[in-house]
Length: 204
Length: 123
Image (cartoon, rainbow over all chains, first blue to last red; front, top):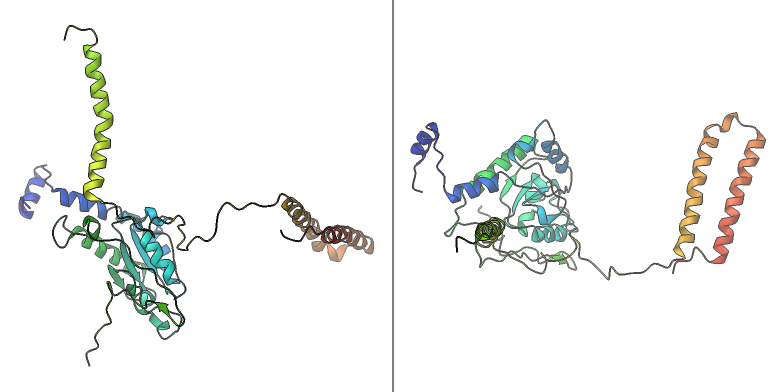
């Protein structure tokens, strides 16, 4: 970071544009996040509304919903993830191109929501894949999804190209494979991916 | 050397080659540095629907399937004839009803014949 913020603004007023590779790179990444086109439950209706003219997700460069995981960067988990569906969701996440991000939309996707006690409902998709932004709500309004998207953009902007905090796709050592659970006798096996989720400690 | 009439051509050729290869090289370098490939077995799977592909895609259908398809088509078209008849049913006489019954019975007879011949049996 050679040029500080104030000087940059001053130079901008004079018509001089100063940037760094990192800034340019992250600007490109955050302005062209392509979500994957799939909806799981009622939250998907709100997601669809977000993409339409009234809420207009296209303002943030994310209007291109791709039907193939190979072309998508962002997975919006829009709704209840049943245990029957979870392996497919995790497999699709694995098939997405790096760098990839996940927004867990709604109470069901983040915790199981009103169906948490159900034997068939996964209690939060973050048990299997790393979630970047959680949105509460049942369902969250389109504004909430826009807020989550802006939060994600801020997160992308803050990711450095080098160092410990660099995104996973720039780390040649980090592997992009997340194990896909399978249907066991009573539950999904394994019940959670230990690498991304640990049993929360309840403090009473 | 500069006196050679082909010198300018050679310069243009090298420039043209560079013009084509430089973007390719830069793109390759960019991909190498800023998006290292992370292939794995799940990512390289052929099917993109979240499900695992099962069996072989190179299966063959018996050509006798066309008989099955034709029978379906006949009854598909029959529905088109039946619909206007059903709409105007209250205004029609007994003769029209009998005519339609004959039509349907003829088609059903054909179906029974095909059934007896074993056309409906798969594989």
